[in-house]
Image (cartoon, rainbow, N blue to C red; front, side, top):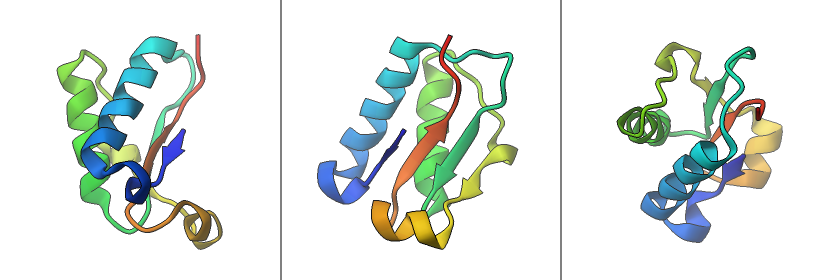
Length: 85
């Protein structure tokens, strides 16, 4: 799930993603990858919000979205890749 922060605003985007992750539940048998476009701070904010809700994800797995996808999702986008239970 990736949201462009330009559409909803960073605070609302991150809150939406965090709520969706909790609602859908992560299958911990698979890796989880937090992703961002141009601004890793947004990804850190998302991971901190998830940690406050009881979902700890390794910040070391954060990765920058490549230029091809980044062109479409926009500057400062943030997201998370996971498998649902």
